[in-house]
Image 1 (cartoon, rainbow, N blue to C red):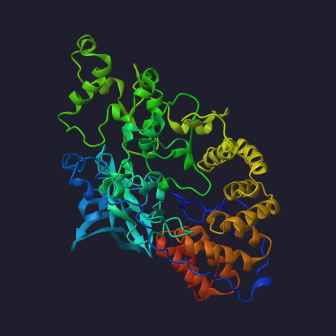
Image 2: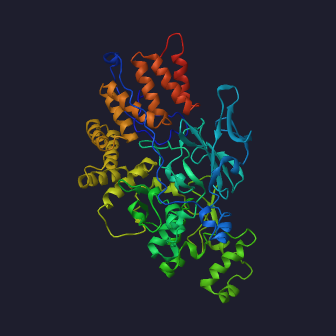
Image 3: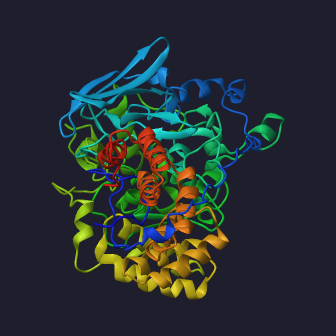
Length: 572
């Protein structure tokens, strides 16, 4: 078993310890390094709140647009997030796999998540929940903070099945996943006025992390300050078709991979701009055979309705972003949308006994990427298949599907770079058959863009995974010289340095990464082991405690802490 881990993941293993190593046995002669290890980097500094950039909030719209304001406040988008107390759905259930009893409840005007495992005193605590995420139409989760780092609740409410269960991907977790970072990709589509994470971190946000609950008017119309003073504002309906559709696409398209452009972030996008300047989406070229929870735009593009009508059809052809039909009105509302193209005469001939067009042509099926969640099939198939093939099946195909940009574009200078990173992301998600394709493209891309830190880091891990540590070290060092804030590159380079006997440099890199991502338990455990083997038991104990602060149910950390507190401290 390897002493140290490489390839720092965004979140730790769902099934066991957060320090689960990927490879590399690092024969380290610690006796050469028993001296003091000077390794403490400065904590990441605070970041001042960003300028409003002209955003003024929904209330500023209410005076002139009261009718729209009042109807919009009732929509799922407007209710996509808010203070936890406003969105409380009480929970009281036991997760059978882990044996943990979870509760979510209000007490003294605050909302709490408590968790305990009977007969395990180390697992008995609670966290205050600050915000809810999700309108409740499909589900809901909550956010809590530790030292300014924002995390998602380990349990979610799933509306379609009316159950509480673990967060997506953690249904079989034997330990409590309390270290799930609240990434910008999630917050961007559920809140308004999101403040970017403090530089160098993934989930340490200024306080408060966002200025307005829910998805605000300005998400689709752009900053409203100039308009409030009599100026113009973006009306998506008057944009050209591509820019119009991108307003919806920013949150209703996930694709198989989404690659942010160098120096850009999706949350910086404003309506009317070209979305591809910020992010490029990739999908499989094969017709979609599975339904992801956020695949509506991709699915609609495959529909005969969209193909025949072209730019005349958009999301707003059927959906009014300012209001939603009531449950009693839903069937007739959407039937009229269908008949607007297919005519009332067609409606009298085509199954007049069944007014609910969507029940046959847009049936709900179980999502392939979020448990307990149904998703409406926006492919609008004439005869939908009885059981769509699951997305996971593609991960095990011997012949790889073709990955293409969506929406389709003519070739650009970024094609190889983005395609390489897209395939690499699929490999990291478990599509191991794509590893040779990803590596080949990465090599080509680096020749064209030798100073791209994302490419260098990805190629570094590809080399490291094959035991080519000298090449990996060179690539990681170059990537970090360009962008010192790369957490995975720092952690992986540290594993290589430790393997080559430079424990001082390894711990310096690990410590800097761990300060910026304390939820990544594997990094903290590597530091603890390094100090322990160097004979600095007190420092090792401090780091294990820090790991347990963010991940209190991590068996590996609990065992090491127990060993370090015995009469004869041990490092295993």
